[in-house]
Image (cartoon, rainbow, N blue to C red):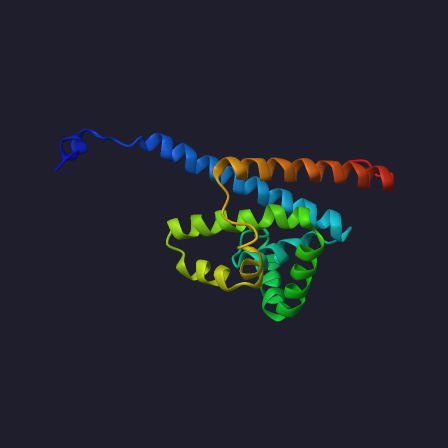
Length: 174
């Protein structure tokens, strides 16, 4: 067989693979953190706790968890009882905020790939059947790593621009 003699000599660079996986995870965390700041900027003061619950709903997983166990339990209870409210609000935000949609859908793809890699099949199934993923996954196909870097960077820049605008309009200081 041609090429079989080189099989034993080929070595993948595991350290390069690990570095790449770490880079992707960091980009994912950046996108999630920016979304967690961007949504309250759009929804207004006092919406930060709701944003965490909303992002957990969109990602079909607990991607954001309050540190306080009582807050965590309250968030879980609200998520189970307020599914219609969450579904409507998620749909409204994603339809009205293309900046958010452009960042979140590729981030859902990255989350899906990470969950597949870690064998979280039930989370992948929940994500695949979610309204958000079913509606937008074809419009926003899985990004390359370079594309995802650009998407995350542009999302962070847009958040900063809108935050500065919000501060200048309201007269608040950071």
